[in-house]
Image (cartoon, rainbow, N blue to C red; front, side, top):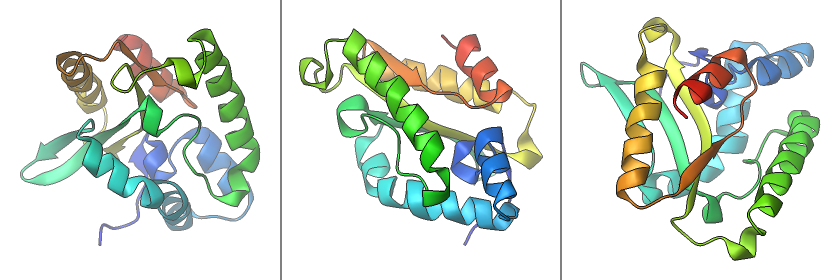
Length: 169
């Protein structure tokens, strides 16, 4: 298995400040945070993430050092599953997603392949500050455009994620 370690910024590893701080206040160390988010969130989404073919991966020497996790909005409307300890965060995320969907006429009005949902980004901390997150966004936008998507939605919970999202449209 992959060692449990914090990833720069990435919610997938429990590194987003909201996730880190809430779970940290509940006694979760780095390994427990990574495990909780992996098991409750990305574990259940794994098959959809692989099947969608919409995520982008950064490799260095054959090793995965970053991932932009992406799904079609129709397959991932609303927040991803979260550990029970993050229920308040999930409620806030859901309210924001519901408001965004309403601005598009509701989920029923959206077509498959129209909007993507960026459900997480993670960069190995040992490879941080090298432009990997920016490149993951850039390549993911390229991929989505080629597939005919109108846009993608990214919720952010840290200055890192917000900066990366703004920088990449």
